[in-house]
Length: 576
Figure 1 (tube, rainbow, N blue to C red):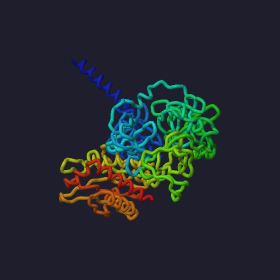
Figure 2 (figure 1 turned 180 degrees about the vertical axis):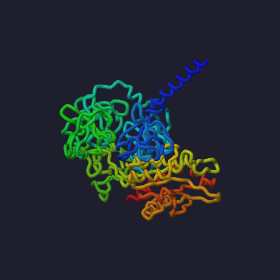
Figure 3 (figure 1 turned 90 degrees about the vertical axis):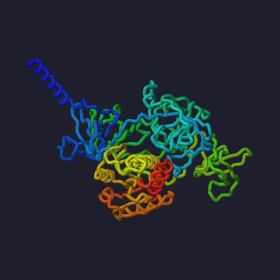
Figure 4 (figure 1 turned 60 degrees about the vertical axis):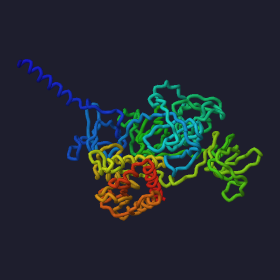
């Protein structure tokens, strides 16, 4: 028996040694990664500042996530080594298996917008029964759709879904055709067609500077990859990307900069480039840029040590229009004698009227109707068919573009916040509001960062650190209120420092103007995320979950849509 016991003891010790020697045996998802958002991010031996530093990450460095504890994330450093980093010093990303579905429009003249909200510009309308392709997101009120002629957002209630099971994985499993070269689109709203002809079915449009892979050429057309299928575009609008004469160049700012073989700072080195040297840019991927290292080799470098030098503006055919038609988007749109708003009126139109296009002058389309008469219509009042430029007029989104905005969904994880009389958890409601607001701001071109994107606990100091690290232009903390007086109702906006009052005032004004609920005004609030925040910040209590009527209202889709639109407009007003 003693011999058997001794054997079991040896086996147990052997297993312990295996687990200690190979910490990478922990279960983790290869799908989830972190990226360091600042230089010299300390990696510690445990989940806390009291643990010793065992290494450092440089800005842009990526690692796989193993698990999370509070505001600390355990990451895989190498095959046999792990460490912990603070979540406010990194950005967490997941590989998204983006599903597309098919659907049908079930409303009449359903408007398509450039973003998920009525604040965004209308770019067209769809009639009842129109088939659409839908990119599935977690936005509860809006869907991103594509048709043969247009791409944009529509209100969810006007679309009936039918699953197709198409995923990115299916796309990746398709056999790849032989690639000729890569290129960049040099005009905005470039039409992609099913066949190499202007009469071919329209698959969608590409924005300026979109990267495309070219597979074959046919006359004046080239075949490219487009939304899980092949499509054709006019060759004149594709700028060859893999040659030195066709794209931007990168000027080196560091004394010596390592060139890597693969798109990772841990891949093997090809050599170094030196300060003030310039190299052709082939492609860009996150924080890395691929350059033409020499006549035969391409390599990857960290782009925060580069200055991008754009080529001279192209003399594109942007203002030229060829055969195409426009459709009127609004009743009583006027056709004028000249391309100005004070020119003589020639014709009054109705939504859905179509005209032939013969030219474009200063964002006005020159159109011709059956009698042969010509006139001008404002480009932002119509939708365009054919491979012509779609004119848009910037809305309030121009004030939000490139602004760094931190959205802070209150509470989370073990901190549930208040609980409504009907059982509504504040932490879930703030997350729901944050996601809707995120979609709107992201569509406007803002750099939006969530302090939490899942049901996790994030300490208040960590939330403030995120604001400081990213030099936020605005920090918005979302909450729902509670009090012992069940009759108390309404919205309150808080600030602490004088430099935060303008932001709070703008958001409060917008909320008061848009919502039919009691507005309790802007007030001084001694909250940690405001008091310790050196950036413009506001905390908004968006209703009382302790009031049964308020709780019923704030949990509706309509309220969530209206309140996020109001905050969106309040931010635009603040930056204006």
